[in-house]
Length: 178
Image (tube, rainbow, N blue to C red):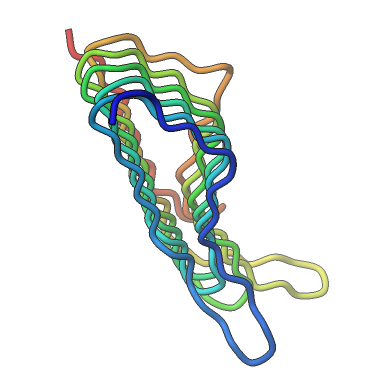
């Protein structure tokens, strides 16, 4: 059909109940004849976050996105063939006090549109807490790719892809193709 897809909140998250744990479900939103407007997406889970993929031939607006967990964050991929992409905060991270994890990869691509981003967070924070000290152990942050022939801008946005205080793997690509 022609026209835009407009959604409020899309959730495929799992929560921990007594004796069980799970992962967030994958979310895919695609439209070939119009734009996409989604206010909030959450595919977080206890063990892993689900992957999130949004693609359109036209403009895409995405509010806050979460694919977080205690072990592995899910990948977030947003792509527009010819339209603009505007996002608020994109989050694929791991917070865990008992084991290390991996933050998901985050990519935003448009062949000719502009890309405007808020904060991008892909990291793993694993710390062993004792009475008077914190000892960090390396997890991994995911790769971040932002690519377009148009303009790339942010509203004082932060791009964070780190392992923790002791080990840092930063892979950030901001590509403006001329």
